[in-house]
Structures are given as structure tokens and as C-alpha cells.
Image (tube, rainbow, N blue to C red):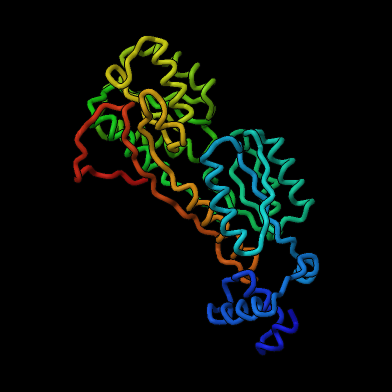
Length: 341
């Protein structure tokens, strides 16, 4: 690396930053460095780099579950950027457990990761450990599941706006007695989806609407949906806070002899891969998971590599309504008013 720096008349640290594609090195300098690297067939010593820069070039990632293709897509987006910048990912699964999440984070810290991307577990309410890490200057980016109390960059989707769009779609298709199967009440994204649903119902002065909470899984949502439909037989539209919750609702409705969407329309949130393969296929809100993953890594690396760390920002990605066969067809006027949170 010293030879490259001497030949180009720049510092060793600039060479190192250029090889990692750092933000504070111009594209022209990066191009000169990489051309010489290829010419010399230079292979950096990772261990020496780690010692010199006091970094492990490893990023910790903690998500609630790995078999959910939404989080899988987020990880793909992160991995693409991390690889190009010379970083590796160390991935953990919290299984929605606060204790496991805390254990995962501590293990990652002990393995000297340079920063952390975290999607909070649905059980998590005590944020003291994360607050301590942030006060020490440890880089953390929250993804998908935000939190108003933590001063960290947050990569989110417009949960409120997506819920408004989903509820508007149910109403336009003729549904009048709506229900929302919400996620765990302590989660930021579940709260925003509930707010969007309820505000839209009030705006349209619907005669009856109801909200019931459940876990983000098919088993719990099946029980919640069955109980809800037994208590309120007139419900003709359900907005579920996730596709898995929607599948639980669809299963419960079918077992009760209801036809989808003739008797009851159901809409989800996430657009999981198998949602289009269901019978009927699931109307849902797609989230740009890969782009969210890319943005999370870009933001984290900026906080890792920039000595003058920027103020933490909140980035909100738009959802997209994907209309399939689990909801009745309806006109889609271009002048439907939007609600804002």
C-alpha cells in the first residue's frame, strides 16, 4: 500500500479509503488508485488493515427472523454494498425475543463489529443497552422497525401511508365493516399501520370498524381472526399488518365457510414471495426491501468512516399497492385524497 501511495503522491490513508470506496475520496482519485492496484496485482492484508485502522471490517446484523423473505431481501441489499466496500456481514436472528436480541448484540460487540444494523424484536421495550451504545458513539442503524426514543439513523417504510392506501382500497371496493389485524402494539411500524387504518375509517365515517392485535405469525393471527369473525360476522374487509397475518385471516375465513373476496376482502402488507401463489392470490403492499438494505449499509458506513458523523436521519420509503384476487375489484380514481400523519 505504501508503494501505491508513493507512486501516486498521496497518503496511505487515502489509498486505503479509495480501495474501500469511501465517501471522502474523489472518484478521480479512486480511479487512479484502482488502476494501479490492478496493474500491480496488489492484494491487501486484511489483518494488517484491521490493526492499522482499528476496525474489523465486519458489520453486525440482527433481524427477527431469517426465513422471512422480506428480511432476506434487506440482507441481500446490505450484502451487495458491504462487499463492494470491503466489509463482511455477521448475521444473527433474534426470533422476536428481547433476551436473544440482547445476547446477539453483546456477542457481536465482543466480536468487535464496527457497527450494527438492527430490526428490533417485537418483545423489545427496554432500550437502555442500545442507548448506552449510542452514547459511546457506537454506530447503529435501525431498519424497518423504528423507535422515537433512540437517536440513531432509521430506514423505514411509510407504514401510515401504506395503511391509508390499503384501507382506501377496501372502501372503494365496497367494504363497509372493516377490521384491522394489527401487529404487536409496542412496535413502531404496527402503531403507524393502526393509525393509518383508524384515521381512514374515521374520515369515511364508517359505521363500524375494529382493531385486534396479534403476533406477526400465521398461528396467532389465525386464532385472532377466527375469534374476531365469530364475534363480528358482518365484517366484510380485513387489513392485516403483514402478509403472514393475512394468511392466518384467510385460513380462518375459509374454515368458517366465507368466500374470498365475495364475502370478505383481505389485504396484507409486505408482498412476500409466496403471497401471489395463494388461492386466492393476496392483495398486499410491497416494500422496497433491497433498497432499504442498501440505504442502511450506506448510512452505517458513513457513520463508521466519517469522523465528523452526521446527525441521525430518518429515511422513509414508499410502499406500492399490489392488487390481486383477495380483494374485490374497484375503480382506482386518480384524485383520491391522501392523509398525512
